Each structure stands twice: as C-alpha cells, then as structure tokens.
Length: 531
Image (cartoon, rainbow, N blue to C red; front, side, top):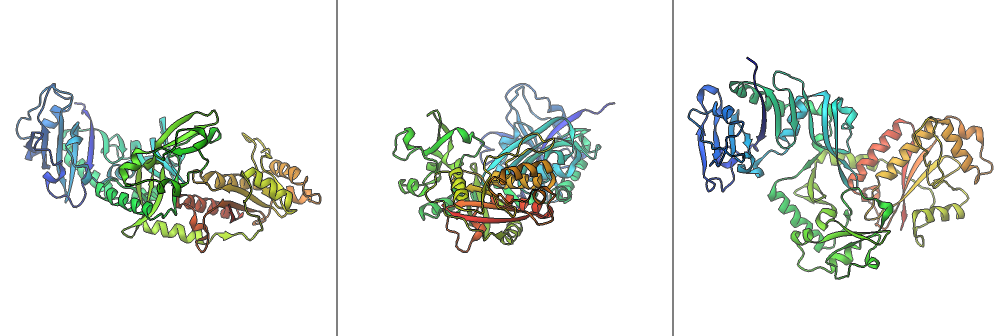
C-alpha cells in the first residue's frame, strides 16, 4: 500500500523551555484549549493541544488522531488550531496543525532552527529557492527561485556579505523526507506512517545539531536576526538613549529598499514642523536638526514618523516609517547590534573582530587630493581635480569596450600615469558604498584581462598624458602594477578610526573586494577627502 505524503511544520523551543505549558501563550486556557495524551504505542513523549473546534474537519484530522489514545474532538472548520508538543531527548518541539501556530509562545522559539536544519538536510545540488539579504549600508532582501533544481552556488549563497534567511530544496536522505523548507520553522514533505514520526523527529534534531551547514557557508552564524521581544525592547531603549545624547556615529537615515536614485530630488521626514513642500526636501537629512526638534522621543514616535521622497517631477511619496529608515550600529551587553529595515541583527563577536582586523590592514593612500569644499557633485569635484592637477586624467563617464562583453565599463573617475585608478564617491547619509567597491573590482578585472579595454583606457588617458607609452599601457599588467584607490568624500571626523568610520556592512563588502583584488595581484587602498 502506497504511503500518504504528509506536509509537516515543526518548530523548536529554546533550551530553557522545559514544561509543556511554557510553550503556549498565556491566554491559551482562556481560549478553551483541550489537552490529549499521545498514544504510548506511537513511541513519542508529549501531548496534543487543540483549541475548541468550530466547523468542518481539517484534512490532517485522521493523521493527528493516530497519535492520541482517545478520540480527538474536532468539528468542521478550516480554522482549527492544534499543536503536538513532543519531547526529543531534552528538547521540546511543536508539530503544527492548521492554525496551531497562534497557540504558541513565539518568544520561546529557536529562531534559526528551521533554516539551520534545512541547510543540513538539503541536497546542495538540488535547491529550488533561496531568500537572502545582501549586506551593505543597507540590507536588500532578495528571493531567487527556479522551476528546476540548481546548485546552491548558482544562487550566490556562498558569500560572506549575505544573510541567508530561508532555503527550499530536495532532501539528501530521501527516506527521511522528499522536500524541505526552512525559516524559523521547518517544513518537510514526507511519505510516512504516523508511527515513523518519532524516528524522523530524532533525525531532524540530529540534523539541527550538525555542523554540516558550515561546510556549505561558514558565514551563516555571523549575523543573526533578533526576534526576542525583551531584547528588542532593550535595544530600542539603547537607540533612544543614543538619539537623546546626540551620538550619531554609525547612524544613517536611508531608504531600506531599492529606489530610482536618478529620479530623486531629496528627502524629508514628517513631524518636523515643516510643510510638505518641494523646497523642504534635501539631498541629505540633517539628523541633528531633526531629532533636536522632537520632544518625548520613543520608539513609537519613530514608527509614526515617515521618510518622504520628492522626485524630479516634483511629486512626493512616502518611503517607509522613520524607524525602518534607520541604519544604526550600537553596542549592548558586550555585543554589536545593527538596526536595519525595522529589524535588529546581532553580529558574532569573532566575525566582527575578524572583519575589523582585516580592515585595519588595508592601506590608507598617501596621494594628494583637495577638499570637496565648494563642489556640488562628485562629477564637479572630478573635473576640478583633473583641471588643477597635472597628475590626474579625467575618466568619469568615459566608457571602455570589453571584447565580447555585454556592455561598456567606466574604468574609474580619475587616473594617474602610473596606473592608479581612483574611484570617487561622496558618502552621504542616504547612499551605499557597494557600487563604489564593485565598480573598482569590475574595472580591475577588465583592465587586467582585456586588451581591448586597456586600449580604450589608453585612448582616453593619452588626451591628458601626451607622453603616455602606448605599448607599455596596453600590455598585460604585471602583478601589483595597477592600484585601485577608493576615494571617499565624507564629513565625518576620521581621527584615529581610519576606515573603521564606515558602516560595518560596508566594511564587510570592502573586505571581500580587497581580498579578491589581492588574489588578482591588484593593489588596493582607501583615501578620505574632507567634504
């Protein structure tokens, strides 16, 4: 007889949860729940919790009934709620039926259980869907899914600058289940008899404890989304304290999602005592001025104020709440936390120290550049430098061809005769640095590998450098012959912090790009310019 395929949703409670009643919301008794013992012949320890039924029988009634030693009272209703609380070794699990999740105390849930377990169970060559957030001065949530199986690397989930939040794919052990999906909860699709659940739960717990996932992506534990309400409240209090003390280091107001920057005139925050007129929209939000105008600041107020944007057509639109627009780094209880898109993330200490130690090893360039003062845009600054300094050729917007490439590439903003490629970016409170770092890497790859691109760069640079040797310039560069210099225009006080003044997520990106350039034998450094 063919086994019926069951779709199960499973959650794991924190290690501190020992009693069944602690797994449930405090109002569970008021909701008139009924408790049932698990049939001893099934081989599971636990109990079944069912909210008073109200309608037609759910499809999972017969499967759940198998586990009980007495009839389960369910009526005919699509909104039936039930959970089976199961003890495996010393840990408590919930197998959810219908809308049973609403019965659980979600503050007691192990938030990374489903994803971590799925990653340990999945066949990495047979993945269907991946959700992840890309790290920079912002976190951009992305979902990649395909109608057919793909290798995990094809989804781009082997990078240190991604927070992977869920994964779906084929299970490597087909006897355990056929498909698996993991977020906070674990969902499996398996052909099984009810009596097999006990052994499957043991295998699932064993998979959760496994470290196999670190072989696939060693960075996964480095950044963890915080869902514990008590910790979130404490972090919100720390955030308010930071605002009240006017400590705006590593404090940014930025749209949390992708917008058309070319169509944005400026930004404004509501509740500022200013009318919603175009002239009140600015390229940068003056954080000191805005928060200085507020009284009785709390997290609720941050959630009730909104970041607005004005377009080039003089239209205005609401982007998100101010709370969601904040990108903030703070230290609390000897840990580093980051707020983005209304969510708090905790950084692993070892990971943080590893990133910072690497960042400290990156060279600060000693090239001479003037201050940005008096310039309106990066383009204007680049032109000013090229006009006033003989050693710099203007390359901004001068695109070079790549042999058989899909598009033309800008080699850099400014170029020296000894092959220093300067990529210039004004670090505003609403901009990302990822484009800057990516631009430098792409240009370095093109110049190192493509003679056609080098010839295009030579043709542009020779207009400034009349004595530029063509043969020397277009030949394949020697190791460490070229240098990528990231020029960051900032109003921040550099002092002794150096590159550490940049947002942590940007530092992660810089570290990854620097490592890749180093492997390519391309020198890389950073230069700060006063805004």
